Image 1 (tube, rainbow, N blue to C red):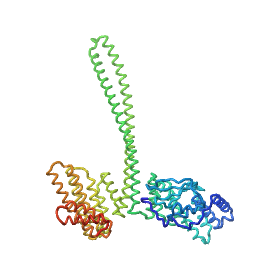
Image 2: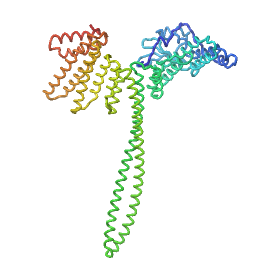
Image 3: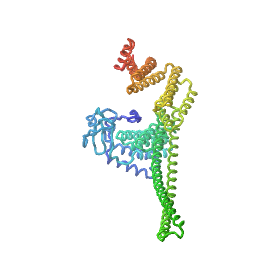
Image 4: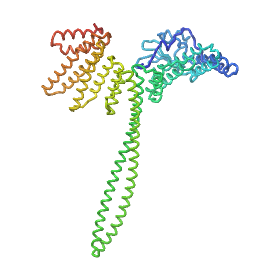
Length: 564
């Protein structure tokens, strides 16, 4: 479950396998009796009344789960679970897929028991709860118990009850998420967070808020996701690598895209108005040309005076009538043009509004990315988000370096900041796709700046392996670009020149990778570096014994998965 925080030790408190849940009828009867007691004026003043009501709703919540609910987290098989079900048999057994993994589902009237691909019991999906939200009712009862407990003698019991409710909501949220119902999961995670924050327990469950936001975002509920992620920030919870900032930025980018879509639709209306206007203007021009010809004919007849024939005089009268009809047509067309022009301007104003709204949303997105970058400059997701923002908005990316400069001013000996600076230059270089002289010069400038940044990184901290890795990858990936370029070059001389450049790039990658391999203490990272070194040494295998030995050494590391 990517990005979902699951701490089974917290979620599932394994109880004795012989603990029994209340049958549905008994659970309902207990709730009804406890509700009746809570409405009695005298009994309502006693904390025990409300604790009993809370317990009754908790039992009602558990009842549909069956007796196996206490066996979750024990890794039991179907046969082992069946021993605790007092002879109850599933209605059917089905093969299903959850999260891409094959599972087995036992179907019971009120719930489904789910077993993973290893045949271990791991999940209960309740289908027929006794009440709509029994945990919510239990929570209300605990709150009321706290209110009437003047001496706070039951404070421990109340806090334990509220804590259990929060955990139950969280567990139900995990189940909903497992079954692909992100909207339900989000609502349940939110209830887990809200329950945890309820007095007197009053504990922040930032992970639940984060998960509520994550699942709300996955379900397309942007407003809810924004609310939950903002709750995280309010409580100084940022998740791994400042992911909360990244998520909020992505939400505002989605808002911006929605405004873009509206602007596009309104823009289509503008284009249609423009086409209609051009069509009407052509008609007006045609009618105007006809009117001019008629006026010329009239002028010729008038110039003849008494010499004009009866036919010409009759034509003159006809011309006058035709001219009046044309004038009326032109006037009507001009009125339509005026109306259409107003509609076009109105549509253009709407487009401008949508474009301004999109820009504003993107500014919010950028602000979150910049805030996240200030706290987590090594976050690749935030970094790429910022780079994309400045490139797509055609704004000067120098702001990125202002942020880096500010960070370096605060922590001048933080080598990771120089590493990130090198990554920024590298990303900017890769973003340039053109082949003009300016494009090539800019790419080279960014390449050189990246090399300098990685060199500064290892000067600040010679034991920081990522400075060497950054430089090695820069040259290695450049070599791959040259290899791709060579594969399409038909001129032999140019082809050989590109290959020579490629080999130079690989040679330049060799020493940084060797340094990173020797410095790093992380076996997995060293094996990953060995993969690059193996490829480089293989390229020069025939050029000498040192390359042959290097290839054999790193090939063995890759094969064994153990750095030496």
